[in-house]
Image (cartoon, rainbow, N blue to C red; front, side, top):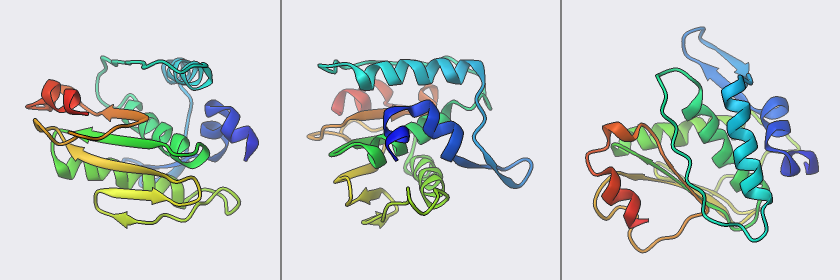
Length: 171
């Protein structure tokens, strides 16, 4: 548990299982050079004291593993750190809920010693009472995140968001 908390990369490479929809199987998360670089950036941010806001914008083509790793980062933050709140923001509610489904899959496939109870466990929220943390989904609208705070906001496929700037500013 301690190694996972101290190292995002260790957690990803040892304990994250994902679904490969093309191969139709469950596979261990695979590190690619661009994903390792992202891990390094996030790890530096988590380790920094005091922690300053950080913005990462990823210009990418499809199927590069970015959405999957960002989902796994959300799981890592909420499962290994107290009072974390991760927001998955996507172009619409359905797409945001699909990100949360990926997060649930990752959690449900942790080995027993890492598996946390998920409560509440609803379409738009997965809570982790053991860490007092949660993952929340919101669509990209003018005021979807208004009056809230977050440890991490993950805006997936921003180019498809009709109200991307307004939605992000609301958080």
